[in-house]
Length: 399
Ligand code: FAD
Image (cartoon, rainbow, N blue to C red; front, top):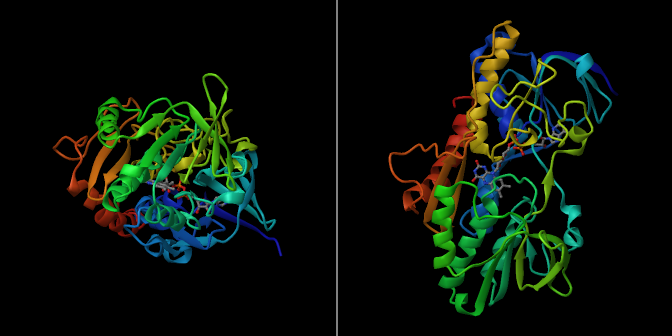
């Protein structure tokens, strides 16, 4: 039975961004207790950054998954449903079950859409025929199966020419594979190829310089402007489009780790909240929607011109929350997000470059040492400390 309800704040999406915002709002303002709804159809909540290490056999996938109910902050109500339509002129969202939810303020945090179907043959071959991906809880273990059973030949790692969540993840798993192939004595019989729709290894010079040295040391072949368009699982062939010449380039593989194309979720693309490129259209400093001032956006679903990561959300959430409270109190929005994002670039089992930078691609580092150097300490930070900070700090609204 569909029904109608009203909440002061409706949050669409209970992932990293949605839960962090709800938890911080409830810590800052007790009057909001009972007046925040989080709409999300997913039964489970995932700590996705660890999937790189799951694919590399260094963590178990079960530790990345928790019941959604267990992360909903006390004082917020979880509506297990999916939003299908936005009516921002009427302060209304409609859900898949036909419910009409009215709000005073709306926060959109639905994450990114993975377009598996945009690579021909990918949906049919993922998880078999040497095809794997860290970009899905269901298939992340297939990456480790392929790496640990690799006997030599061509190991291809792809990166699409679309925005992705965690721009560094396509290459991190390749460095782990290289490290493992050396340990299992198959590296000398293997070609490792990074086939990317991008033009460089990384967008920030300081870290790109360091990564180019890693690529050289590991003898990895790079093919930039090569966008994966087709997989033939039976023949173990991958077809790329050369983005300069539009020519088709076919490569044979023995294993291929695919990072699929991604885009804004379809229901956002078709809504009036979207910018012309499909993402939620927010002011890059205040996170307020450019046209609907009682609407805010956070995380992967927005058009914020920075790399889409959970670390970015850690810095976006307090800005959004404070500006939303200003908006509610008819005060000017003075809090600004500087585009901070971070990418812990795993370069092997026990080494990591911690990239942190802002909108201007200027390093914005946390530690008082050169973070472009590969370090064991930063690897341990990613593997052991960041998950604890996520579950016990970020999702509880403490940071
Ligand atoms: P999500 O956390 O994905 O949550 C979106 C939520 O919206 C989901 O719960 C979904 O069910 C819900 N939703 C979707 N559609 C609807 C709808 N119609 N109605 C209601 N709810 C809906 N980040 C880092 O900081 N460091 C890393 O090292 C890192 N590595 C990564 C490695 C991999 C392999 C992957 C996949 C990601 C990695 N990330 C990393 C990225 C990070 O996980 C994401 O950027 C972050 O989770 C985005 O948060 P979000 O809230 O925008 O979206």
